[in-house]
Length: 228
Image 1: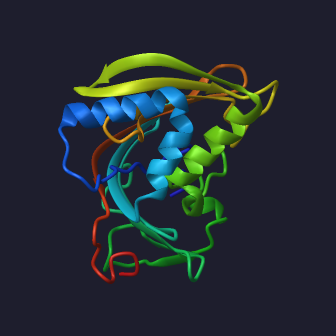
Image 2 (image 1 turned 90 degrees about the horizontal axis):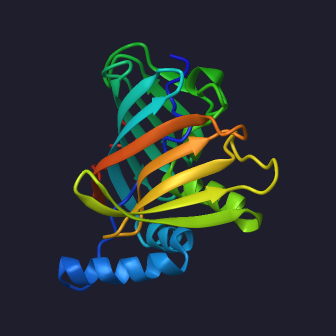
């Protein structure tokens, strides 16, 4: 089961606004905020939500493809339901016990593996861990490169019918964070959060592309959803 986790598989979220406004007005307000500091605005948007669920579709230069329904609840509960690879596999992380539970053939079936998040069985080739897989960690990594590096707003683009702002962040010198020297991020102009992320090595080679679809935020999960 090695390689279950993705290098930049990080969860995404949709921000719920407290007032009812037109989509055009929301897009204009978010676009204005993104023009100031898009990464900080994305972090602020993430801070406002308590949970999210998203379908993540990732591909790497090694040819590995993943489709995962990723669920997250603060302060750090994670559940991954795999469609590709290992269809039917379910993995959860409990921040209270700091343990990962893996059902290779689905919840309710044997075997059931109780693992540390540092176990190589559930890490990818870069050593990324399920307990550090949410969008908050992604944004933190981007901000680490951004501090002494370069942030460029490429422009407004269309991504599968969504208006997005394309931002490129390159770390200073030879700095890398989790093997990444550059992130290209497409932030949704409705809520300001990532809709697509592409990561690159220090040499400029693409590591992974992640698309985030069917986003739901502040979802009320069943009581045993993360601890089935």
